[in-house]
Amino acid sequence: MDAQALADFRAGARASAPVLLGVFPFGVVTGVAMVAGGIPPLEAILMSFIAFAGASQLAATQLLGAAAPVAVILVTAFFINLRFVMYSASMRTFLAGLPLRWRLGLGYILSDNAYALCITRYTQHPEDGNRHWYFLGAALPIWAAWQVATILGVVAGTSVPAAWKLDFAAPLAFIAMSVPLLRDRAMVAAALAAGITVVLAYALPMRLGLVLAAVAGILAGLLVETRTGKPA
Image 1 (cartoon, helix red, strand yellow):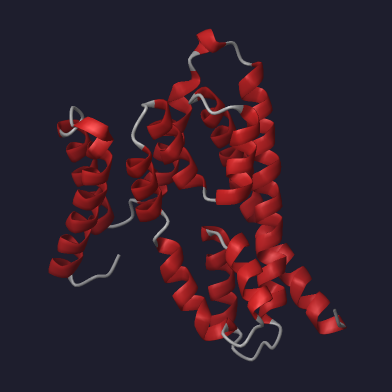
Image 2 (cartoon, helix red, strand yellow):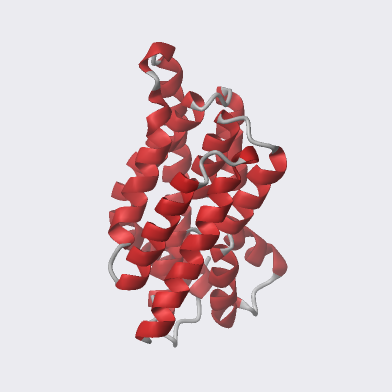
């Protein structure tokens, strides 16, 4: 690593520092929720390392706790994580020339926050030549903070008596994630449509109500966005 690469890495790490204040508590809550949902501690930690996707981890936790079929869990996680396909397509413009080992490694530690930090940096400083080092500096601390926080949450969850019923942790985390996103009509319409659908479809077998709610939310958001002409 040359001096410029080290400077870019440090710049990414500095940019990610404020983000860690939100990542850490979310990771702790996710760890607690996974244990409360019935996932054994070791499997919960491995799930965090393998998946590294808080929203899909929480969704899978809720579905596992409800004894949903594996197919439904996989489809739900797939739809939740589709946004990473869009992130990757957007980042390809800036990182396409990297060796495969770099692209695979950066793809693994890609997260919502890291994407926001990096795409902002790349568009504001198109002349940068060490974009991958900035990416690594921004994304690696987020990944590390998430894993440490999740492990602490798992440990805390195993220490809490079962009678305390911490199953509410997963939906509470989802609410905390969703509320800041309600900034325009399209997002509000999507949230309302998904919320109403999941209540009405609660009795459907195999927890299909969650999948229908996701589809209803997407369609409602797109409809409002099309009518207003303002992309969400």
